[in-house]
Length: 431
Image 1 (cartoon, rainbow, N blue to C red):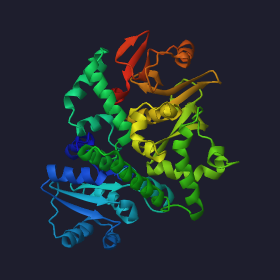
Image 2 (cartoon, rainbow, N blue to C red):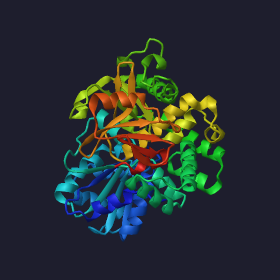
Image 3 (tube, rainbow, N blue to C red):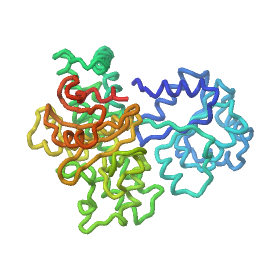
Image 4 (cartoon, rainbow, N blue to C red):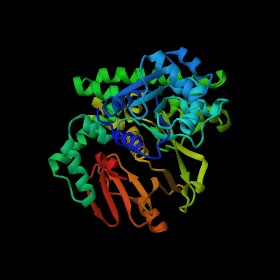
């Protein structure tokens, strides 16, 4: 499968300012695959080290000298390690804190060697561990599940992608037949999501039940991971918080409520569990912004937030949503469909590098997302269907006078009354 991060990896390889690279991301988003694929395409050889599967590798890092480490790895792997021609891959590096520390010395003493380190629970282990992290000595990238553009690539719809991008730029409607085709792919994506194994399975067999089995396995692996780098007392809390994310998205008020996790629940009881979930990359918080002023992050409310899962397909699977529910427009799904759509938009925009917030005006209005696009603070309204009513957006516009607004819905492209209409399938175009 094509992944857009490949070009970022290529820029890293060719950069004169290159440092050892840490590629972060939740488990099973495709980190190991894309780095090994990249190594096969761009290097004459590679040395792959998995610190979870091969504990013997840990012994090589008692001496943090790059020369010593390289010599031992070369002998152990029976590979000649050539600067600039051999890619060294440290997988599940969080299992070996000394290997993380060694990246500092590779940067300072042997930066002509190319190293990519991968970690699915790296954020958790670093924040909860007691070891030296090479601050300023490494570069970071994050790999997310396939976004919708990458999903279309996997379905070999490159021409459709080109048409969508052109219509986005020009604010002109996409031809009706292609608009409907893209919406059908979008509905598929709500069910399948962007986890590579699920996308590959659906592409081969078009069997929703097999996709659900794969997603169930991934969710189970996430639950099992919650026992790692976590206090014993926090494990059940972490699991029930994660399970409640999809459930709370079905509520009319989608603000995360601790009482929905446990009767009488309080923030102090679950803050460590929420931190673990966010650091692992399997879900993310969307904070309410209290004032529309820069910098936006300085005006967020730390007590009011929504919670979204890292992949919309896993969100559907967590609530046992059927393929037919989505394609058949089951009216009984309407309440959850709004939250599922917001989860989709959130994950697409986060993958595009946005910092996101939401805005409320008492109980009168709520705008789903607030962010910066270029020099503008832009409100983004999300609708699961074609819906031109914008009471909340209207209140925001009257109060804050943005340069323009964005409405994401099933409606075709257009620009009218200061509102840029973006179809649900075109969120990946927003940069």
